[in-house]
Length: 243
Length: 243
DNA sequence: CGCCAAATTGATCAAAGTCAAGAGCCGTGG
DNA sequence: CCACGGCTCTTGACTTTGATCAATTTGGCG
Image (cartoon, rainbow over all chains, first blue to last red; front, side, top):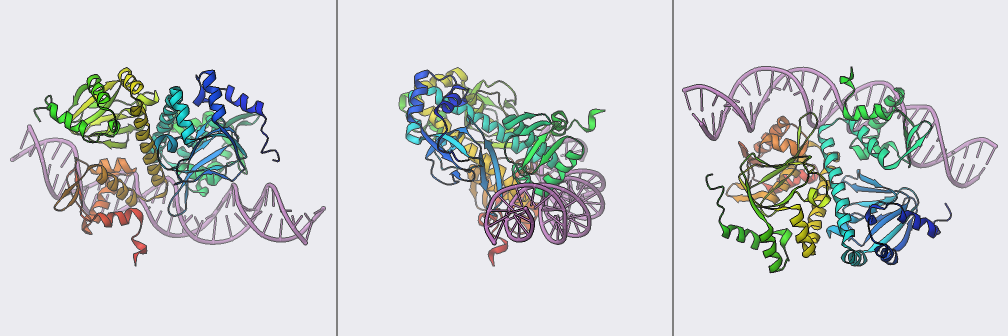
């Protein structure tokens, strides 16, 4: 990718005109002020946006690309908190919560961003309280998701956790293809393991099993869900009781 | 407890004058308006404050007592999200996030509350934005805690998770006694199991082991940490590498 | 005193982690 | 153009953790 620096202006406009949750329902002049205060920024695949423990400096809106938010355990093992894609925001817990970044954000694809420094987002929020309200909604939604994942970790077995993780990825980054719904970014077995609290071995075995059953099709760094209903049945445990 | 209905006015004043996080730094008239708009409320031990899935109706400040926030998995197993004690707030995710209550809140002791209906807390937040800011901080802090617990669930073994859970309980509800630090509310093995994603059997075995080592002392529904440093060592895995 | 919930403890079993070996895929540089 | 090296993935064998099953004991309260 050789044009990292030149995401066309019209693409930014388009991304913002489309329903960016954080700016949904904001007045036109609020919109314009937001754009004025923003800094354009890019990250190449593999570069970090911020690191766990760094003081909260800025707040980001993803225009294009994909970000992985993860924590590292003392023993070096990674835990993936979530992925963020276009129109989603990064850094809101730290910036809104007034704490250091609780996790590390890494670009897993070349990524274009709009960024606001902490004072600027504060200025914006003070002037247009709708933005603060919306940020709260978004945090509320993420909180619900985290609680759900915690519940899954405590009550479900590995295969169902993997099914749930794939279900969420479909909603977030699913792309229709002739074969089924494909997760539209590079996703290794190791990544899925770090999302579900297991090992790449177990993920590999589970996917192999599902592949044999025709539920998914996977290649290197790519997963396609062929039978979404079958996967949902595993996630919700309708399998055994079905007949 | 026969005086549930008569928590003296001066106790409310005292509770509010003490550092209630949500009202910290609020002006005196903000304080007064908040008190005016609030409804006094009580729950006896075992009664619920709100249920998972109910529409968000109100926002609560705990004056005295203790609340358990939990989710129920489809198979009936419970997961404890957190406990809330005096000066903490309940229902903020739902009320601020504009979603139904994501969990059920139950009083585990007789509890006194101040409650605000959604429109009233909105009025208050509009007039005194410090309150909205503070609510965000609180949500940010809870978010960090949830992420930490998710990481623990994914990377740590049961005994360390129990040690971490006890550590958090000490900070939240620890009370100095001659024997050590006591968790100041009734806490069963089952409760600890639901906080750490294990079974009451495993919790019982683990506590027995620690009791034999002199680290904790426990009776029915009661846990006292005799050697906090030893527990911390288990939580942080300094045990094996120590010599 | 008797009942019931909470807690203990032993025996057994299975889910999933660990260890190990190798195969497939891909970019890169000789 | 092809060979090399490094990831990613697969699969088998073995082990461990902690759940499950089961039987008692303890303690508090009516």
